[in-house]
Structures are given as structure tokens and as C-alpha cells.
Amino acid sequence: MRFDVVTIFPEMFSALSSWGVTGRAFEKGLVSLKTWNPRDYTLDARRTVDDRAYGGGPGMVMMAKPLEDTLDAVAKDQGAKKGPVILLSPQGERFNQKMAKDIYNLDTVTFICGRYEAVDQRLIDRRVDKEVSLGDFVLSGGEIPAMAVMDSVIRLIPGALGDAESVAQDSFMDGLLDCFHYTRPENYENLLVPDVLLGGHHAKIADYRRKQSLELTLKRRPDLIDQARKQGLLSSTDEAYLATLENKAGI
Ligand code: 9D3
Image (cartoon, rainbow, N blue to C red; front, side):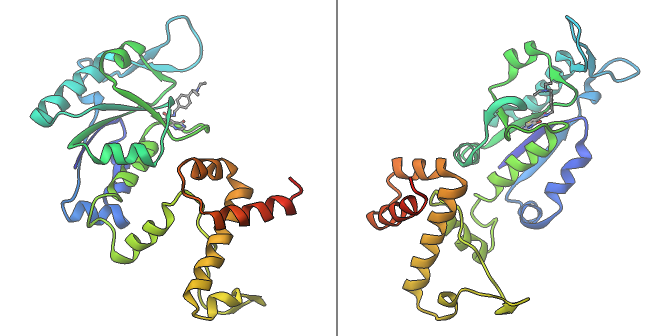
């Protein structure tokens, strides 16, 4: 899988390519990343990539021309494997695991990282296939969101995760929040590990963890309970347990 990233801060991407699981995926050659700085595609001495907004208002707008010339260079470099262009933007569709899978299935994808207040709409209309946001909070630009998206995609590549990490992911992706976890010591500041986890009775442990996941998910992310229900991911045992929780809560 190949990522191309259009950014005026290319150095930020060493955070992705040099560390941890993602760093190892780059070392193994499972993924490659090329950054493209729109300042390198400007013609003026100041290498200008932004200008004031027509109609007024605070903040600068990224100009269409340097971005379009950059995208032309990217497309030429990708050749026959040219992929879609995704703009990281607060106006985008909220990113999720399904989008990660969709991107994973591509040979190449190009991310544009916005800076300043906005990107000229004509560049978006001409060259952007999809706008993606990480959620409803304000960041300073699209670089960290682009890295978050690429991280989630890299984790889907066979061989990117170690064996232990892969198993952990399997049991987590069933639409509920994960259960609580404990490690040594058994007694930490007089707080004890739940007894059932010490007994080695695997069916009891699985049942305890499932109930714990259901309880946490109902409390913190009731939207995920509805979604899991619609996807047929909840058994009659799950539903019975949820019913007892809803009775306890007086619903
Ligand atoms: C005043 C209007 N703001 C838009 C909601 C201005 C604005 C805020 C932040 C314009 C650009 C940015 C920079 N953010 C991103 O480029 C960004 C982002 C984000 O801020 N939050 C969540 N996901 C993303 S993806 C790209």
C-alpha cells in the first residue's frame, strides 16, 4: 500500500513512519509514504500557498493552484495505480473503521492536509473525491488526522501486527467497548483483581467479560448497543443481561 501526503509540514510524518507498529510496517516494506510540499510547486520568491478570503473574515485560505500542481505531480508519480484524493477537513464525513477497510483495499491514496482556515472550494470541487473528519473538535490542521487514518489502515495489513496484537484486535471488533483489564500485582494499593479472572475457568471468564463490556457500552456508548443490535451481534443471553441493567437503572 502506498500513501501520498500533501502537506506543508512533511517532517511531522516521521511520527508515523518511525515508531511502534506503524514504524515496523514501514521497515518491513508493507507500506510506503511520500510527502509532497505545495511550497515546492509555487513560482513566487516567497513560496506563497495561502491568501486572504474573498468576502472577508479572519484567517487565510489555501490557494487552489499550488495544491493542484502538487496533485498533478502526485498523479504522474502514481501512474497506472492512481488512487482517490481525500481531504482531511472539519467539514468531512466522520471517519470510522469501515472507511479504514475501504482505504486498505486501495493500491494508493492521496491525503491533503489542510492548514489555515480553509482550502479554496474550487480545488475541492476539481480534485477532491472525499472529505474526512476525525470528529467534532478543533485541531490546527489535517496532518494528525491523516496520520490517525493511515495508522488505522496500516493495522489492517496482514503482518503489520504481532500475533498477540492480532488476537486482541479480533476480540475487540465485535461492536462493543472492550472489557476492563488487569495485570500484576493481584493487590494494588488494596484494590483487588476480580476473583473470576484468577480462577482459570475460561467459560466463566468469557461470560464475566462479555457482561462487563455490555454494561460499559450501555452506560457510555448506548449508540453502539443500538448498532450492534441492528447488526445482529447481540445474543438472547446478551439481551437478557441488558434487560436486567435497564431494570436496575429504572428504564
Ligand atoms: C471557524 C471554522 N473552523 C472550522 C470548523 C475553522 C477550522 C478549524 C480547524 C479550520 C481548519 C481547522 C483545522 N482542522 C483540520 O484541518 C481537521 C480536523 C479538525 O480540526 N478536527 C477533526 N478532524 C479534522 S480533519 C482536519
